[in-house]
Length: 180
Image 1: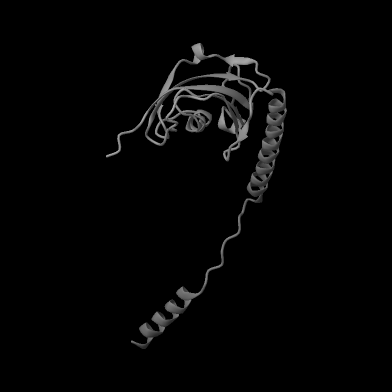
Image 2: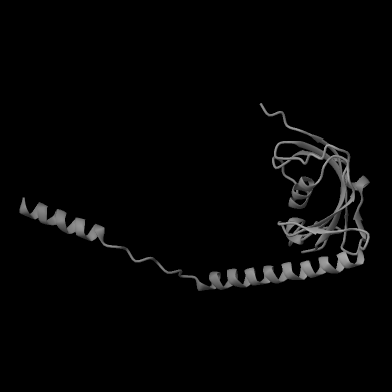
């Protein structure tokens, strides 16, 4: 009986000791992640400088910056009431894609009219975020960083790797979700 009690006490003491955290075995992974973050920050800075140059050239529009890292300017304001879409609303729009020098890559005919439910369907992040700044009838120009567009892969045709883009989006219709 004494042996059992002694064994119980020893096991309880050894269980209550703090365990020492393990250190990473692969330090190369940490170095890779730090270098990758540094490259991404540098790429973002370069793209923001390209946006500033494009904005200086386009004196007809007044661009605003967004919290998501893109710039936007209204070419035409739509009709009242000015209600922006929210999650679940169905939006219908057409758009065109240009490079930052305003060279046309894809026009509205090639891309067609797009209709989707906001924040509920898969679409490139640039379009998902851009439509949230529009009301019915608005036409706006967006300068999107590459990470919101086609990223490190491009589209395999006209859009290059890590290419920031200029989108012109025209909001055709917003159908509000029925909230009950």
